[in-house]
Amino acid sequence: MKKILLLFVVFPWMSLFAQQTDTISLLYCQQLALDNYPLIRQKELLSEAAGLKIKNLSTNYFPQIALNGQATYQSAVTEIPQISPMFDFPSMSKDQYKVTLDVNQMVWDGGITSAQKKLETSGLQVEQMSVDVEIAKIKEQVNLIYFNILLAQQNEKVVGNIQDELQSKLKKIEAGIKNEVLLQSNADVLKAEIIKTEQQLIELANAKSAALNMLAEFINRPLYETTELKIPDDIAIVPVFDNKRLEMQLLDLQMNKLDISKSLVNTKVMPRFFAFGQGGYGRPGFNMLSNDFDFFYIVGAKMTWNISGFFQSGREKRIIDIQKNILNTQKETFDKKLKIASQKDAADITKYKQLISKDDEIIRLRQNITKTASTQLENGVITATEYVTELNAEMSARLNLELHKIQMKIAEINYLNLMGKL
Image 1 (cartoon, rainbow, N blue to C red):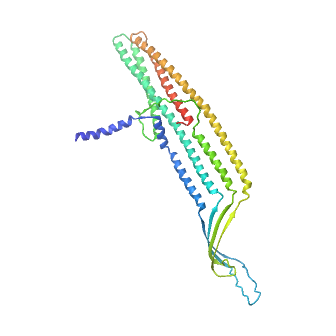
Image 2 (cartoon, rainbow, N blue to C red):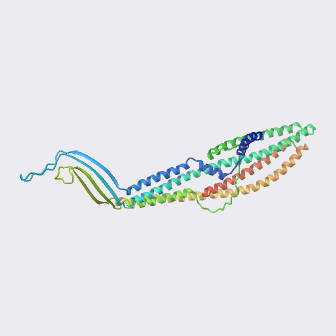
Image 3 (spheres, helix red, strand yellow):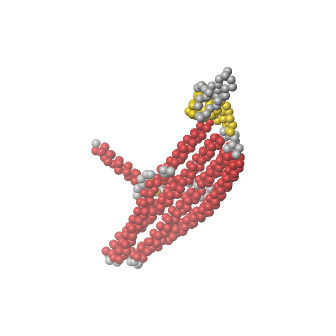
């Protein structure tokens, strides 16, 4: 029984610990951010609305049925003069009544319904791609927050290591003070420097906590102070311009929509053919010489052709051609901007690789200098202030290395984002 109780007590804590010490990656955060962003649901709503509109357009081919009723009283009616006592024509009633059922069936609409359906589908593609373009911007925000956390995380490690080094050195200095080999001021300098590192760690922890809260809101899951963010793997960047941006796809879809709009203009000048029928009951019927209520019907076919549309269609097509030229200009402009930006990111990647190589050299040299200063401090050759100066120089070099590593990753991710490949 005690073992069972122990399991109930330990398992929740183990579960909590496992949750608070998880490791996440950039791609994982990007995917969660996209899955949980409210705008993603707009695509489904747009699709549903477009589907309903297309179904409504399909009803153009259905028979159009209308029930009409009418009752009138008129001041005069048609009268046939009596030309002989032998012929007595009935007089028409001034009150007349009619109930009809009218049916119109589209036979051919000149292709306008089909073109409207294609235009609606194309419009849906444009709207959904516009949503995708907006959603893609979420990745950039997630990237920025992620790398800020990553930088704070790496800097915490560097500052923590320096703090450990200072505390270790303080113990040796205090031992030297007890033996009256070193002055108390050396210990005070080290203690002050340890407090400085504590301040730096507080600043880093607060900045990291704020960024974690922002990232947690984006990805809709809790993140903890102990959550470890993985440094993205090295990316092989091929400096060949290859624009795969969603904005370019959006412009292509907009041009396709204009092409469909142009075909719709052509359908507006085509004749339309209908079949129709009307059945009814009223007074008078189709026999105008009868004043009795009667049933009647009529069936037929008709054609409508808006001839005046020919005068407008040419100008409408010209307007569409101008709009396409505007989109082509936007494509060229966007492509040009990307080429310029990609050259900067590619140059940044090369720059940071070179800086990192130099950082490694500087750190090796600074380690040697700090090691020498450490020995000199323990032997009373230099003061703690001089030692701290060298230790801070080493820490600065290490922080620069971490900064340049993160900046290189940012440049790599930015380059892929820029090309639309991430």
